Image (tube, protein in one colour):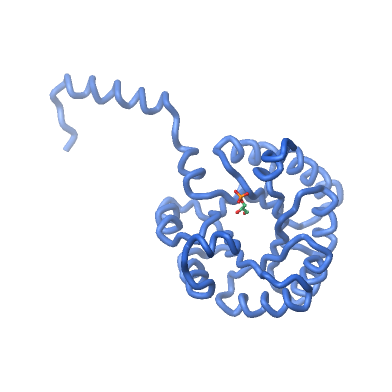
Length: 217
Ligand code: G3P
């Protein structure tokens, strides 16, 4: 499973990139707002840091507007993925942009039927939002499993990009189901390394080591 980082925070991306685990980045208008930065400037900096796809989201509501905005965003760098919403207009924009060779991430997906349409429209990535479904008492992971089954039934090349991930457990479940990519905030990716037994074990080893009076360096 590829790891994308769901943030426009340059320092957080740099920190995670040191481990070589950042396969791409996703942003959205809320994350740009949170960064307090200009969309083109911050996106360019992200693209300079990361070789993989960097999603930048359009805000127009009509296909024509999305296509124009998407092409403008794509000028930022070669690894830009144009993000469009899963609306009828968004699907039209997806078809037009992917036909011209742009990478497109269709976002705000909440049903298997929406994901099926996005694949038919040639989407590079489909972004089902897990956490927001869980928020309303539905099962976000069930949606990932449904899309996996449908895409595998027909050999669609659209990659399942599990989004709105809120916990390390979401990461594990997405990987078990076979999502192609998971995008998560930096704190969730870091939380994957934590285990109380690791901390406890380390504490015990260090106590015993101190009793030996030895040094390695
Ligand atoms: O990638 C989409 C993601 O940013 C949405 O996450 O936590 O706002 O539902 P959230």
